[in-house]
Image (tube, rainbow, N blue to C red; front, top):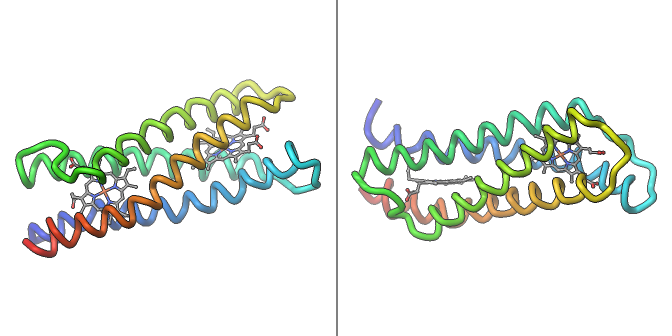
Length: 147
Ligand code: HEM
Ligand code: HEM
């Protein structure tokens, strides 16, 4: 495997998990519609929990992978500017969303506020991951393909 191929693992990994996260969000949005908008929508709780755990763990591992790759390839931390900053914020939000999700999973009860906070925190984290497509492709062009 060549140096450049190794640098492509993180972008492809994050791309795949972000796309799968859209599916987790779609499942969660059905719950939002039924809990807060009074509409009937079937919520597949076990599937949302499973896919949600897979995507958040995947994205967190990918963020750590990105940090390690940058450190390994260029012997420095946080050299990608906005991509690094937004990535850390996204990872923090998703980690918090995961903790709330595990709590909701283990202590089921009729609630409205906590699921909403969980949903909004994760949706914001996911939105930042989508922004990373833009900042990340700039990093790809400047750091990886321009090498
Ligand atoms: C990117 C990942 C995720 C997104 C975008 C997401 C989004 C959402 C949204 C929008 C809701 C509806 C909230 C509401 O209507 O008030 C929800 C509900 C829920 N989520 Fe997630 N979620 C994610 C990951 C997870 C994970 C990892 C878990 C469990 C470990 C989880 C467990 C739950 C549970 C149990 C509910 C229903 C809560 C209830 O009805 O009391 N979610 N999620
Ligand atoms: C899918 C679009 C993405 C692209 C194209 C992309 C691209 C890149 C590239 C090229 C690097 C340099 C290291 C390497 O090549 O392995 C990098 C680093 C990094 N990425 Fe991404 N990335 C994306 C998504 C994400 C997401 C969703 C996160 C966070 C949740 C993230 C967090 C990071 C972090 C923390 C670093 C280290 C930055 C530094 O230390 O300066 N990336 N990314």
